[in-house]
Amino acid sequence: MLKKFLLLFILTGCLVLSACSGSEDTEEDEIELLEPMNAKIETTYVTKMDISQVELHDGAVIPAIEEFSFDENGYLYGIFVNPGDKVYKGDVLAGLMGKDYRTITDLEDEIKELEKQKDKDYADYEKELEIAKLNGGDTSEKELEIKQKKELAEFDLQQKKDRLAELKETDIGYIYITAPYDSVVAAVSSARANSYVSKGTSVVALETGEDPMITCDYMTETNVNKFYQCYALVRGQRMELEYVPYTKNELKVIVNNGVSPVSRFKLKDIGDKEFYVGDYASVIVVKNFRADVLAIPQNAVYSDSNGEFVYEIKDGERIRKSVVLGLSDNANVEVVEGLEEGARIYVKS
Picture 1 (cartoon, rainbow, N blue to C red):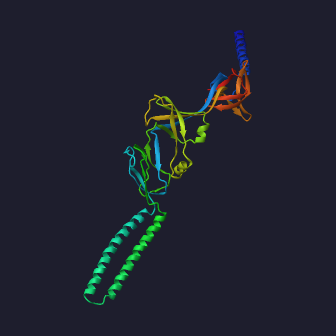
Picture 2: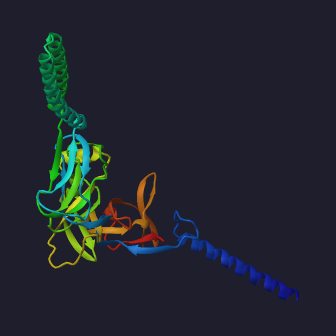
Picture 3: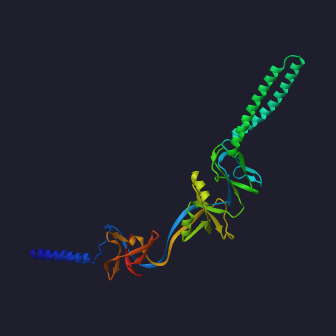
């Protein structure tokens, strides 16, 4: 019995020692990673691919329009059309008045009334004087009274005429915008009557009848010219775009009036593509592009105080490889230096 116990002890001890010995061998072969113990580790290979940086912008198909504004600063008299209205060449779309316009019109009305009253009063004065003469009395006092009344009326009238002339020298009076062609009103300003309007501020927009346009959030012409590509998807169809810039004055007016500008694009090579005003458009911006470059998944890259690196697997061993990276599309990143095509590396999953 004792012999059997000793034998069992020896065999168990050998198994434990064997297990310990095997564990140490495994630890020497394992690759130490900077990841939690429960992180799943996979491998991939350095390959060649195209890499680009892409942005998506929400947009819309709008009718081609022409915007109209006043050439003077002033106060809005009124906008006489609404979106969707049919207008004809020569129709008045909106009116603008100077800050003294209403004072001027009031003065003009007053002057007309005073001149009418003056003529009536003068005729009455002549009758009064004629009656005084027929009665044979002394008319000198009457004549003096009439003369004073006339001088006072002339003085009052001249003062108003002088004031009117003074106001008209600097005031724009009343100016208006007319439709240059038959069209449909696409949009009108939300400005109300008597509100101040800067010159160049768009007040009314008319459809031009040309091909529709696409708008999205604002991008400068300088930035758009730097993009590798800029196009739109409408109803699953790719639309090539041509940027329509604002003039400096247009942009200044938009900003000064607290309006957010938008990017405007003409559609090129429409052909037989089917789309409609009001359709949603996804504007695709490809900022940068690298063709056929070495690349690895972004989540294969580690970094520390010494820089960026990956774990390459070569002959079953872990090898830390410092890398110089280039363009990234958030999923993959270009490898400029440090790895060769086909190299096997670890990927964090």
